[in-house]
Amino acid sequence: MKNIKKYISALCLATGLLISMNACKIGKDYVQPKLQLPSTFRGDTLDFFGDTSSMGLIHWKTFFHDPTLKMLIDSALANNFEMKTALLNLQISNNLLAQNKSNYLPSVGATIANGSRTWRSKDFGSGPLTKYYDRKGEKAPENRFVYQSQFGSDINFSWEIDIWKKISSKQEQLLAEYLDTQEAKNAIQTNIITSVAKGYFNLLMLDAKIEVAKRNVQLNDSTLRMIKLQYTAGEITALAIQQTESQRLLAASLVPELEKQIVIQENALQTLTGKLPDSIKRGTSYEHLFAESKEISLGSPVEIIRNRPDIRSSEFQLMAANANANIQQAMRYPSFNIGGVFGVNAMLPRNWFNIPGALLGGITGNLTTPIFKNKTLKTQYEVAKLERDKAEIQFQQKVVEAVAEVSNAVVTVDKQREQLELARKRVDNAHLAVKNANLLFKSGYATYLEVITAQSNALDSDLDLVELRQQHLDGFLDLYRSLGGGWR
Image (cartoon, rainbow, N blue to C red; front, side, top):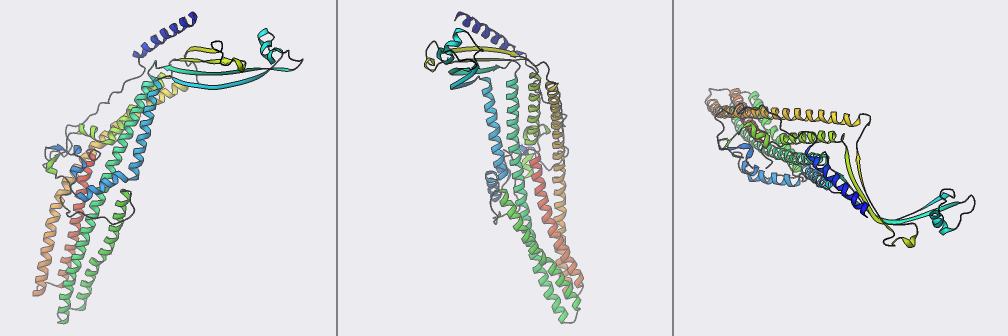
């Protein structure tokens, strides 16, 4: 017992010395790469935006004003299949992270019962002990085998001391991968919100187009009646009726095409919300669907690193790659394991629980180091370093692309605003031209071709205005997403 105590004391002392070596951590701590970011986004000098809260920090329920759209987004976030999958991936990553924390503790196992019987030649052992256990002391016949039995039950443990921080580096890697999975879920949420909002805007645009088409059909009906009266009076030929009817049919043919697109868009929105195809209720207003530009600001380029899920995900991937490089480097250094066993052991069943005679105990300490493994460990370490460098490049690329994306969205929104102003003036002018053409035609100062041309221009102007309004909404939404909005 004294020798055992001395051995355990020496082992504990060696363990303490090895644990104290933890201060000499192998590898490099993660440091965010230097990013050359501008102070403002290109286009932020425009007067289109205010200087209040940053757009990327606004919660989507505050950003959107339409209650129907909010209801659709809520349903999509709860029932979308891609979102459900992302949440399961998050749970998987969380379980892996929690499991790795247990690696700091020793692993313990138990052998409830074991028994063995070994047949050996009579020349295997000739001592008194062997003769006693072989067939209960009976002498084995010539050229016959003898057997030896053994029975036992024990508890064993094994514990690796984290000398070079392999376990903690693995914890850093799993934590980064877990956070990466979290950001992937946030990115999916942002994309779902954007897709639902754009689908809803497209639905409103199709509704507005149908109203334009039906209104033009009614206008053409009125013009056709007027031309028929003049044809009856002999003032114009049948060609005028035919061309006016063609213009009417052109406007009327838009209605079934738009109705088809509406059904397809409704089905697409229902799919995003995880539901079967069905109609979708619309809001009451096509205007003021979300926060006005004067209520918000773009913020600074530094904020998108904290706000955008794809950038945060890319940085967590870099952190995981850095931790993996540290792990692969530590694999090339010695490892120290402590083990032990405690139980009972006997060669005869009746002595199995003969305490203390059958007691079995032992403790081990192993310090092992790799010497030559066909360059496997070195290659894995070199590859891990290259993967870390590649992840850093991808992170920097993602940041540069994000800044450019915001700048593109800013100029798109601003120029679309200018286009909208011109399109509205064009619509007003086209409607005035239709009114004047009808008056002049009734007075004999304009031909039916001028009336048809004016109505065709008015139809095109109305449809173009509706499309520009939808594009402006989409552009504003893209700007919100590019600044990192939507996942909160």
